[in-house]
Length: 175
Figure 1 (cartoon, rainbow, N blue to C red):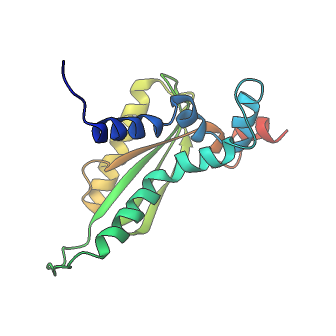
Figure 2 (cartoon, helix red, strand yellow):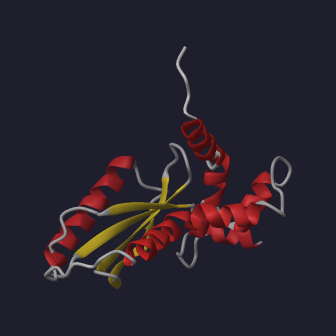
Figure 3 (tube, rainbow, N blue to C red):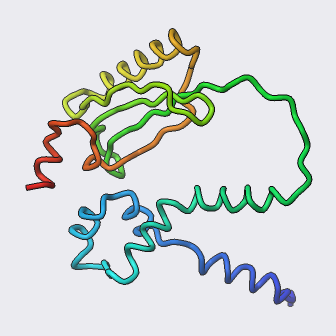
């Protein structure tokens, strides 16, 4: 019979107890109004859900800040400055799962500063091949102006957060 180290067992319990349920991760990507509406009858708890949703949305940023603070106590080595980095982020307004793309936007960043953006457009009437073609045209434009050949990351946001002024979803949510 194999013996189990009690420290390993405690570590395993701790990592299992800190796992956030998938439904809470999906709920964290929704707007507050949509989350309350969608989950009010099933699992919404106004004492727990707002803080849990905030935790889910911001945990990566907070963890990286915590790690940077922890690392700042370490010995610092000086490195030559790298040339500034310009990169693009593709923003998709799309529901979870295999749903159609509602809208697309692009942000161009240089180091930690946003230097340009491509205005969001609605894609709900486009075929998938047309969406892919539009993304390729975006990459060509970015390559021409900034030398960017691919997106550094893809951010998926709920369609109800669509920033287009006359978006039909915004009219439904606000009425």
